[in-house]
Length: 247
Image (cartoon, rainbow, N blue to C red; front, side, top):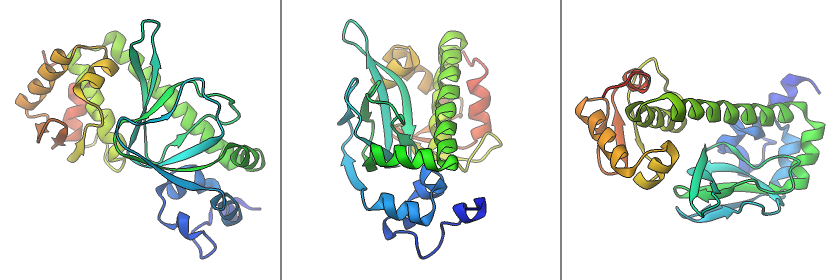
């Protein structure tokens, strides 16, 4: 089958379940043919999780994969003394899971209200072997997550507290509003983590996070609508602050 035929999924053969799904357009399902979508849709189910609810546990056997349809998911590990360390965040329409892996490596939890579309692991593993473009998309997401992890290594190792908080807000804004970038423009979004989780993610204290948020507000970089709702008038300015200490 030609690549054009494989990508042409916007037709009447696409299952009703998939027509308005963002994962079909921007996620891994965009690599599937109508026939493959029909096959997979027969085995899919949607699930909702309230904020704070576990989705899967570290070491748990993997039987199903999921596309995130709505909300933000956090990945965490427990340290030897029982503390939680957040190691990553995933957003719609990210793929949740690791192909060909038998067990989960993280505790996966809903950071906000989350809706996922789930399907059997064996079915997607088989499609991945048959569909090079699907394999490519899964590989591309893995590389994206690796790049983000390296960026956070830099942030935690070299950036000031002010730069870390600004970097975090820029990171969230870009994922929630992917149509925006550092060239400018404003966005409005809810922070998916509590102040405590932000502090954990950024390697800071809660007091330091709150103090830096106040400085960003006083510097007219952000507007704090309420405890979690943020308005950014200029993404380029936020990005600049994330790279320049404002202390």
